[in-house]
Image (cartoon, rainbow over all chains, first blue to last red; front, side, top):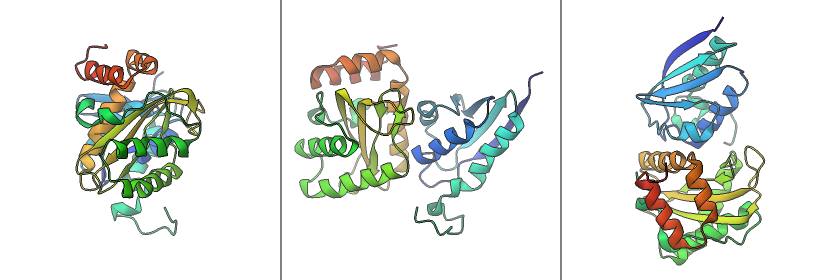
Length: 103
Length: 157
């Protein structure tokens, strides 16, 4: 039996989905064995591949669809959605309180 | 965005003399400065900013490729150079492999969209094994520019 899960998220980063948030996506996606795609309009990227993610060119406000297929698909989509919902803990986004970290 | 719109031909280095990340970044920034695209007095600040960005996570994204970058007001448009290293540079890459192809990007601070489109263009072409293989074999900056043009025209697919 194949499990699938899907969720729509919005990029809330002033600088868009640049390399730092992309590497967080890769790191999170790699914790799961299922296949995970991120779609922006007609483009689709493998969430575990940096070069793929960078081709999304997702600016602030872009709407993306997270889609996982396989074991723990639901958990994988939830974990990735959490990154977007917390704005990748980016202090510069202004929507998160300072965490005390100097990054 | 086309690669030839933002890669500065006169700054391309085909035999990068560097074995460390810091040496590679310095060599590439100084090459952009020699080509007249960034003021010499800004070089050190730009080099420091790029190295600081590397501390957040290596831009060595695997497959022998690195894309070090920063934002700086010394440029008013997306500005990049390409360097090739035969022996490879230790870039603390995600896959642990040495880096042979480097794209260094400097973006104006107020144009995040252009930065993303530049990264999109570079990564889209680097996914093409033909582009990477030909690039690694290029001996002169003229050959690199020709490859960038062929990639822009989708002639390498």
